[in-house]
Length: 394
Image (spheres, rainbow, N blue to C red):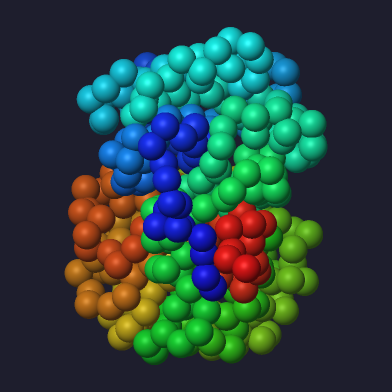
């Protein structure tokens, strides 16, 4: 896979550069950026452009605003403020994406300055990749750089549409992500263990099936484990469960056989709150109003025994509701086990990254923490993502 990269751009000084970044970060109730990992991940590309004297116009989304009904908490004001703090320089934040005000602001930019447009998903035309919208957006710049790996699986105006209108290149983060994940599609050191958590099985189906013949172990936790347990005939109480995915889960269990390990014990409660009373029961003892909210200590230990024998580990999704202390022990045990084990470790998904950060484990303890969840999963399925395809060299 040969990309057009920053190194291929002959001249940047004075050029208006549209940069698609992924600043979809959590904002707390105080209006502060709770986790700036994704913002910091884009800094190398931004600094490179500044050093080369480019005029930088940043494009990002935040959350999922309804078209034309952008709520205040989904504006990029707090994101722009945090970026300004990190770079120790003023950032001009626009209140819109298009229009004369935006054009005039860009026209007055000096080399090395940064402008960030309003939440791109406030326009329904972004998701539909409508040509008129792409055309008007492209008129704001002369070069397009995509550094948003986390949105590379989306066929949107700002992820791939702009590449049809402007010279398009991969940013340093995009380049780094692809370089880290690509080897896993070919040969990787065995045993290979894949750990899946999170809420929904349908987002993981493709990659699990793609690796059934390649991986040695699949460790399943989180909400998706409930669907597998349900498929096996276990009562899962009032737990999150995708009953309509029963046949899919059974197919994976049949083909995977002993490779697929489900929790043998689970942590349950009858409510989700900071004061909820948690108890550990066998996976076969769940009933009534019980909700499965974490894997049990025995399951965590069983998972760790496999992790310790693995040479390559891919982890996507926490194995419990880690935001609550009483339901975060399984994720904590697994994260610490991987961090202290000598292996190639690839972590994907915002929740996985957030969980590790909350635990205070240095990111250097892992080989690579991807900024993309869905994008990383689809990439590992072997798909050519639209946001990457448009950056490939001819």
